[in-house]
Length: 306
Image (cartoon, rainbow, N blue to C red):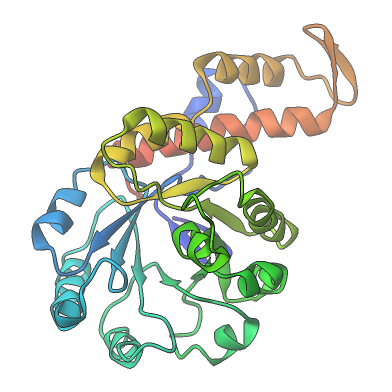
């Protein structure tokens, strides 16, 4: 089991992969989750179905996906699901915001369950994180959902409790009063600011959800756009989005083959390789890509750390 910013990720080393390609074994890299699927805590069938999906992380939701009169049922459902476990998956719990009437009950639940992380909505400052009454060492994914949060994203990302940022684009679009709804072009500066803030703090960054659950082409295009902008992955609201998300954030077979060839040819320092000048930095990136994708393949096949 690897960790990044305190976040536990289920996988194991892949020395055999490197040995089979006659490569020296690299230091273990973490394969950050790519597909983060929200699952309503009050929907037992959805939680059970999620066990068989290739989602890297499940986010059991106590917030937006749960109506007010089902909050207690969602907490009970989350408790039962976490007790049963999700072998091979990282599991987070999305709490209600700190100013919600339901937040205290969510915190009480954490005394008896042990998710790998929590997702906290409506984070606008580090003060919210300082005051958060969750167990020490429990990683937090902070949702950036307002203009205030965007402007303070760098400080939020740098907070020691934070494992990563999640772009909450539905709420952000509402706060910005965008006439065309969730217009990613209109939010381009805010989106890139979230990625920059996460990278400056060496934390993870995740794209917001796509509401178009019946438009596969639109989802695929949005996921590719998120990958191009530098996000580590994407939050999802429907099981049908899991496989397309994994595909959008995966390198092509040609890219993997090129990485293997570069690592195999590397002799140290600057050198000419396939018509381009490469340095140790490029070799390290190629090695990381190979190991990361192999680890992800293991995880999605249901393999867990020995």
